[in-house]
Image 1 (tube, one colour):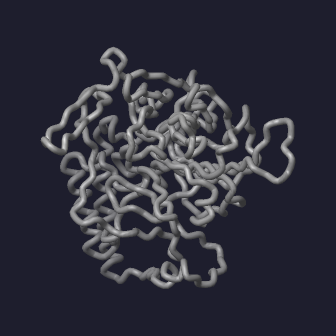
Image 2 (tube, rainbow, N blue to C red):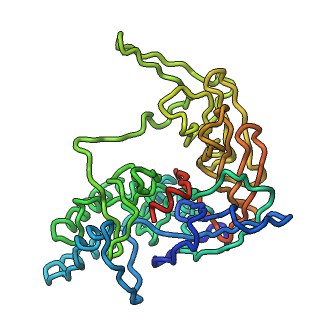
Image 3 (cartoon, rainbow, N blue to C red):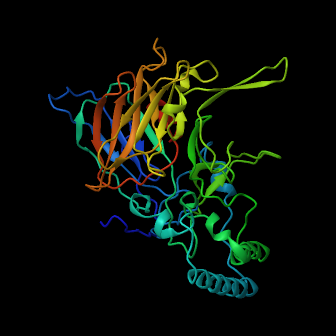
Length: 417
């Protein structure tokens, strides 16, 4: 596959993973692995793995006939409340044709003018940022090294993977949703008005959210939620119509990034004095050691308490990630793990070896890595204490650069299923 090729797909629902014993997932690529078995271990490294691709939300329903499951206490509400798909009336059909024609004309006008790099699809979704099609389950993936015993579950990572080729401007964060880059100039405003026109004629319904839920994943209350920075959270459960149901909206809630564009990034500690109402800021890393850090996390078993270490992606050269940094939040010491060569990854996922470990950094870093020279993707498992590579799992298909993820233990994964 060429490094700049894009794959536009019509999504279908793939078969589910054959085992709940372990899984690992990319932005749109869940890959699962199991290491525990009643059988005797062989002398060489061999694990049972699977890699699977899904598209969320608003995926197309397959045309094949399926057998409806019997209603249960858990799925009764979802199955009985799903609204049937309504046919458009003549006015709606005429409005849809007129709006589509107007949007095509605006898009054609935009293509006559060069787009900025932040909105040009040829830049934003080129190389390993390009989308991938769905991939069926694949088992017995090759592994180099030894997979730690504590890894027993699913690593799920989310990201943007546009289903259709953008009509005009497109930003990396947009996935298959409305592009931020499209809303520049008068034509961009006109296209935004066309979106509201579709809602006015009942062609789309934005009351329950219109986002792509590609920013990250959270496992909460025995449910896996796909999140978005500009939309409602999505519960990863497919309705009979092939869509995902939203789980509610917080009143008067606004979330945003706490920084402005084009400012120097400095990893800082901010202390709030509840008695005086004052705040103080301390730069954690010395100025001569400052690097572009993104997508950080700590040992989640220490959330709400003082932590010593943070693990952050080394976003250099931007927007690619060449490795990750282990930062001592007390001393400011920075230790780096580089993927090397032309390999790039994403967010480092810290997985503790045990919830009862005495050392905070007693665990492993999981990271999807893509080799742009060999055009291959892999899952790397790195010892968080020593920053040494423990195992590498070769993946059967390309894993695009994504955003945020989480790890679900196998016991919790069974509840999700």
